[in-house]
Length: 240
Ligand code: UDP
Figure 1 (cartoon, rainbow, N blue to C red):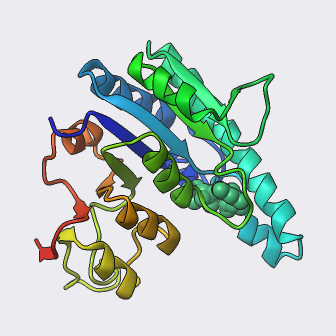
Figure 2: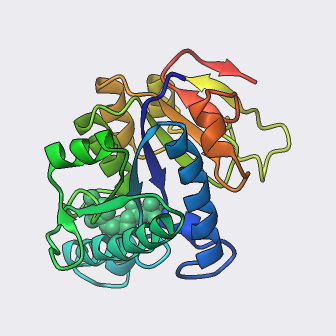
């Protein structure tokens, strides 16, 4: 097993399932069971969770809100997701800590890097809420940042598709999936993996990104075992 410490990025939408808004408890329970599986294998798991299932700053701003205020609301939304995940994980028997980049000490620990690492060493799952604490950023960038800070071996970008394609597979039946991709290729071709700040951070710190479909049961374990289930960004370019 190459990956001892992983940073799992879950979008808010990943918690939504088929709902139009909010959180599907069954979906969250399924994720918790998958995380339990890899924690039981001895893998250290940190999670950055998004908030798009509840609120997105850009959307608020396009409706006339002040962008920074809207982004703070988006960050607070991620804390609701983080606490929901924590509840599910702990019910599944996984000790968990939530750390937030905006202090909310009644409900979670503040983000303290060294403490987060200590929790991971003690086999606790650490969920990072409130993004980076800064407006104008995303939780994808937060995932890359936290991965670098905690020396994660890899970022797992769990999505709804089974990897990165050269064009939209829903529109183009001949779209081809990449097995592997370079960071430079993602940036120059503007491929939809993570935003460019996140990709650049992973590139600078040599952190591979594995993009895979979260809806397939067992995929977190398969990704940890390095089974070819999606696209790995970091190596060379190779079409499957
Ligand atoms: N956000 C922010 N700074 C951060 C991370 C998130 O301002 O460091 C805000 C931003 O408004 C974003 C929202 O939080 O739209 C929810 O995060 P994101 O859109 O990344 O969630 P996801 O798409 O992963 O569900």
